[in-house]
Image 1 (cartoon, rainbow, N blue to C red):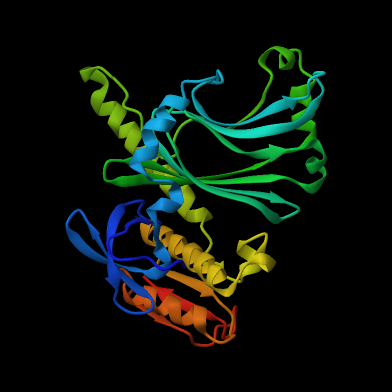
Image 2: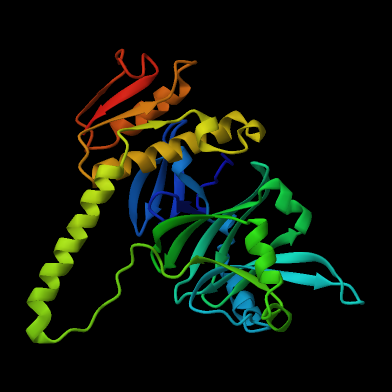
Length: 325
């Protein structure tokens, strides 16, 4: 993790909040001021806000640019591929963009893979209505299984909320079907929908007073059914071996590997707490115990954790931590 200086604005990965960095309590714990209140976080949960391009001086420039040459798209969030042509009209390569046609401003963490190897990594703010250039693309890359991996947070005055992720696999058949369509010469782009709406956001529905009680009863039952289905589908363990989590693990250093492992563990733990799962397992292997120690540090700071142990388990041997919630 890049060293953060006191007074720098930081972004809390798990909560999406923005705060001011106050300092290090120890090697693994940092203190951040959020709206005047000091809170402690694991060091891997905090990054510099500047990594997402959160610079107020740049926001006005982006607002002005987004009005120029805007691509006409339906409501939603889109990955767009625009041909770059030579003087004779022949397509030389393509420009990839992400286009925000939602009402919300977003923070974006983007990774582009070819043959499961990282090619591009971009962290940016993506304003409502904006078209953000990502990188160039050539059709021969379709042979290398291109994957666009997105992590988004909805930005608000307090920081951000509603984190969500999406992975798009660009397949040759889908790509060329759009290129060969009758509409392509006129619109001159290929588009893939990332999301139509922000996942988890509820739209307000206007109903008459007469229907109100029945509506909310039905809505509540449906919401409860969805929670039950999601809980039933949740595994009781997470394998934190890096090759299970990251396609390009061979390119990562030890610090990056630990950061990714802990980020996945914290998400898994939060989900288990949300769904009232009483027992889960984190598979970390035996090794030198660095990951196991960091997991224990997180568990000690989580009030919902009743107990945990690293005893031998018939399913996972000695390489897992059992967590009771």
